[in-house]
Amino acid sequence: MSRSMIDTRAARAARRSRRLARPLALRLLLGVCFVALQLLRITCCALLVLIEPVLRATLVPIAYLSFLVTLIFGFLIGDPRFPRWGMLGFSVGTLMLYWLFLGLMSLFMTLPPDHDCR
Image (tube, rainbow, N blue to C red):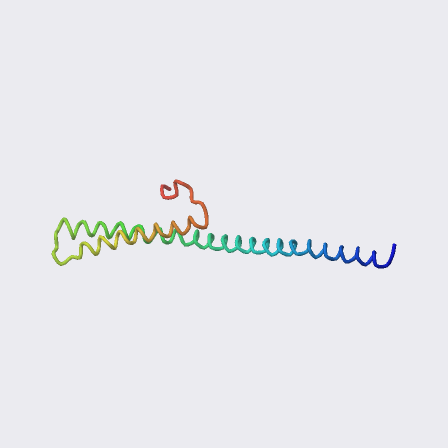
């Protein structure tokens, strides 16, 4: 074999290895990005799971009690100075805030169908 033929083979082999190395680097980069996104998702999920009982213990009773206060003072007793529609809006708003939080949780993980029944 001549010297030029060996050089061309070496040049072809070098081009082929560069071509194969690029997808490998790209695959490694995509793999690292996938792992980083999964770690971020798991971290957000863990934080949301830790916060959820506190929000459930505060927002749901606040919504229920403000609804009861609205029923008693706004409609049954009929105090004209009581802001009945504002209080009713407040109770619905706190319950909707909790539902929005559950919706945010469902973006990061799958909630069981009986989540609110337990």
